[in-house]
Amino acid sequence: MTIELTDFARTRLFPADGRSTAIQDITPDEFVARLNSEAPERVIPGYAPFCRLHVHRNWTSTKCSVIAIDDGNRHLLKSAYEARTRAELPVLVRWFEGLEPPVANYLVPILYDREQMAKEGTPITADWGIVGCLYTMAPEEIPMVPITMLRNALGVAEGGSGVPIDRVAYARSVAFWSGHANWR
Image (cartoon, rainbow, N blue to C red; front, side, top):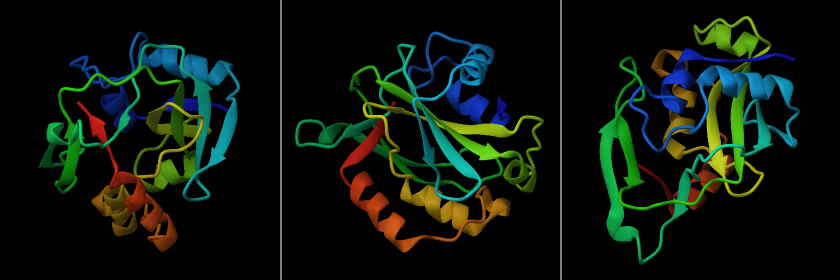
């Protein structure tokens, strides 16, 4: 099985501005080489048959991407309408500013198979393409953000995958993200 980094994930996981929310201490090529040479500790089925997540112990100083909201940090929440790419519609997002999260225990790359990548207009030569990565404290998946589930249901033309909404998974996502946020 081979893995490659998609351009979409490269700009989000290894941005040119070197922001602290990116993967730290390694280049994109070193990251991919490690994923191709090291078996994951665990493989988690994704939200659709073409998706899987590989759990790797964090070998970098990359920080945990999600923080629980509490009375002590709620005042640090910010929000804005943003698009992930120029082709996507802006959606409401929120994040913390001014927090210092802990180093993540795990890196969890999100992989799509070659066939799905081709459907989404991103052909790859490897078996699997990296479309994202979670930086977690536990060796498990963080629920997909509700707006990502909605975008996926809208289809490839709107930056999604074409997978319909799973109401149970959506409710689980809302419950989680009602009490958590990313940070910048």
